Length: 181
Image (cartoon, rainbow, N blue to C red):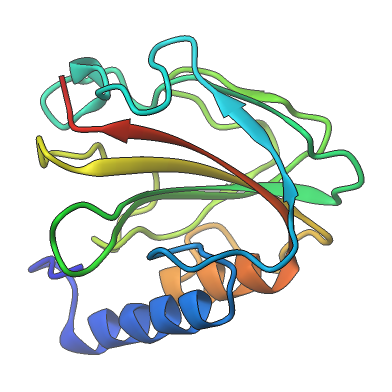
């Protein structure tokens, strides 16, 4: 969150959104416990939950985002994906936000974005997957089933995107990579 590319005002907005999301119980950032949400099963053919993130998907790799699969989003109007790091640093860092994924989609290709979906800004202010670099991070790939499509444009602000995801979440699942290989 303390990226030199982000203005102080933008960092404060993201921090406020993170506090609001944690306080609302959606658990998008931080350790907040979700309000009675259904559970989504999330997996990857490249790593298991709790295992290290393969080196190729880090900032020293070049493979882009890892492939993901999920189930348990029936009844959703859209799906969102948030990749963040809630490692030992004091503030979470968001590496990727994808929203308005078709609810019939059940997987994400390596270095791919589902057709018709949109990406929001990350903590660094960039749009798209920003590969993690901290070797000791906890990289969470969280899939959210939403009760609506989000009325946001490509490149929407991080604070607004996270707030909208939190307010429409009906189910959630997570795959966590501990550290980088």
